[in-house]
Length: 119
Image 1 (tube, rainbow, N blue to C red):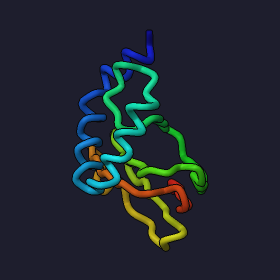
Image 2 (cartoon, helix red, strand yellow):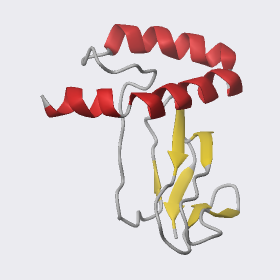
Image 3 (cartoon, one colour):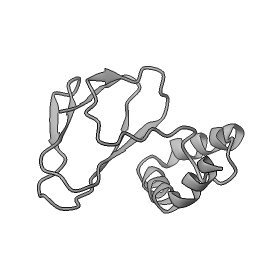
Image 4 (tube, rainbow, N blue to C red):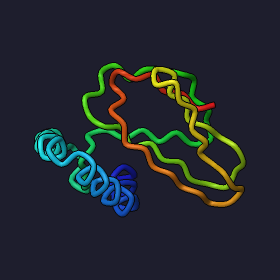
């Protein structure tokens, strides 16, 4: 099944993000991990996020993920120039790509009440 292959292939990324989540929000990580164990639907998913969204070569308009209750992991990767993460509620515009080679940055944010956008 393609979904199981995706989870197996992306396991190193998921484990890294999980470690970052645990280091950043240890108390919430434990609570969220228990929710993941109760809600996981693909056994090859290492968690702890119950859902994943991959945005590939798409500029996303400013939006608010109002029903999200946990942290959102936002990271970029690839070969391109420019790109910014805009957090209008916080008055921030963060540069995602300072160079024209593979550059990855990570943000863990509780986005349930925060407007997000890529510019």
